[in-house]
Image 1 (tube, helix red, strand yellow):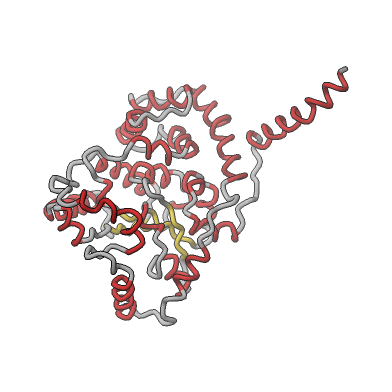
Image 2: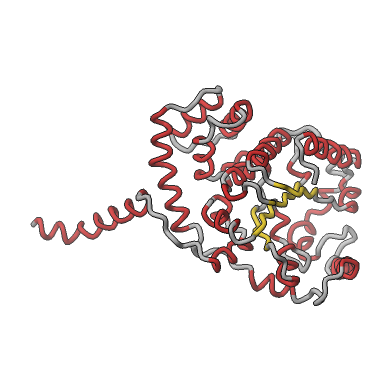
Length: 353
């Protein structure tokens, strides 16, 4: 009878034990190869964004993080990945961001990149993040990395106490719950208290150890592959890099691909996303403002993480289509005032690029 039971349940028990060993044993799994890093750099895979192992390995291979949101997915000839491939840039772009990622998500992302210390990065700012309500709770919860969150908790006894309090409070206010011990630790940090010895031990030895093993095992498996898109885009570029020529080519291609409307919006996007409901947007943004938003405090948390890592950052503010601005009735003052405010925030924190 015992033998029959073992024949039935034995393999299941062995599999469970093996899985637990894989997830909790302090083993450094070598799954991040140069080929995987190259694929991850353009994959825009959420697991890469939420993970740490692939991005930290990339920093050793002369990749430069380009951090943003939805704009990174538009892989045209002038996308940084296309340009880097065509003109053999020394530092290849490593794309980090998805539609819906904003300042606070990227603050945790930057905090989790230990090899970013003393290195360079590019950060793309979208004015559309800075709405009156800020980042939607659902979007933040989806993109928040449990692994990066444990890193923040364990490092919360270092650095600026007020900023750590703000970040912990913000995470809790957005409805994040990662377990009673992690939630309890965040509650203590939000009150300016240090986490307990038990919380530190559990999060370090159990939660984070398991998440690191998962990241090492699965973080680089079956990623999105955008190489064919990049190859096609890069093939449209001239062999010799010439800024004036490229600028003319960009204008030519933009006109060619925005013939279905008079808003200078790409044909494909216009047909799929706007054509059937374009009339709804007529004068719909008359009261839009980008100068009052909780996103500014989240952006301050991001700047804090960059400063902690002593990262040299180039900030790029995304332009807004003037034809779209006019059609939707958005006040130009909303854009110019945002521009002034965000630049002041950057310069006041020592970021001048």
